[in-house]
Length: 429
Ligand SMILES: Cc1cc2nc3c(=O)[nH]c(=O)nc-3n(C[C@H](O)[C@H](O)[C@H](O)COP(=O)(O)OP(=O)(O)OC[C@H]3O[C@@H](n4cnc5c(N)ncnc54)[C@H](O)[C@@H]3O)c2cc1C
Image (cartoon, rainbow, N blue to C red):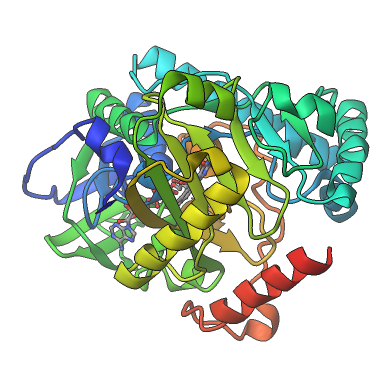
């Protein structure tokens, strides 16, 4: 088994090469993942001089490491959203979540990104009878409030969708899609460069301070490759947000998620496991998500350890995930696991996406495992806002809470307790 991101074996990332940093740009984008690259592409197409500053390489963060599930909806359920934000705002949020999929599809088409994008739909499977009972209620609210049809499947019908009999039923959203995330983020990088943005890899931003230049307000960024002045700053650092943007860091919890992939499976077995090739996830808080890769491996992921990736959490996760995969699919008990890797995603304290301006800098964060589509969309929408448009973006301006009592500086000491708490919730609810 290789401790390596399988997706990266399927593609070569663009390599912009080392160049000197410019003295000044219109916009400095921090982070070269979906968020930053989508913003850079949009801003450069609008004529802005853009520098994307990335500590590592293009797509190094969660954007090349994820499950490639391009999902509708948000992490919070619709009833929770309505009681928190009211009907009108929730309707706009839900409509935006559907538009995020169109946004990815449009970019893939416009930029001819060969990333196996397919509208295969997603399937949520119920781990308990009461979770299944809630599907019918959710589907009704979503049809009624958002005019969006979901299909609820009773347990006996589930065999047309999944080769596992451990679940109590399922719910399908045909609008969701799947893609190869490494190919997608590489393509987004090429598209940003084609539009005129410059990407500087191995350029870590250490600090960002307000500084005027020739009478213009702006920002001085200290980077590992020297200083840079920018009229505006856009932060797209997600689960890797660090001390350079302390106010944002305090509002985000970095959480590890891990994935294994098997060897290439025989066609008949792959078809038996997932006859319609859906993006699948279960109904637990501590959930498993899984799918077939385009070359017919089973990709199986979960929050096997709450802490972000390191040698220990990755190795331990491989064992936990393999056990989980065989519980779902006993047919895979002899399948070789060939790859394991992990990555860090970001949760806001209210588990919502957030975007807008904080301390004068633009940002988009908080995707909570729903970032493939939402990060692309927020990058584009915030870039449009920066370019002077007034795009409808229901996630701008909603309250962005920090930790209760402000007891958090960005070092998530409470993760083991949070992990235990979610396991407990899965047990009782
Ligand atoms: C294992 C895993 C599975 C997932 N599965 C799914 C899925 O199936 N579907 C889904 O929708 N979402 C999924 N997600 C979430 C999704 O991948 C993320 O929400 C999304 O990629 C976030 O994109 P981003 O561009 O905001 O951040 P990232 O891709 O994480 O990029 C942030 C970048 O910022 C850089 N950076 C940070 N600080 C600095 C600095 N000071 N200077 C310069 N650069 C800096 C980092 O090096 C990093 O490359 C998953 C995440 C993980 C980890």
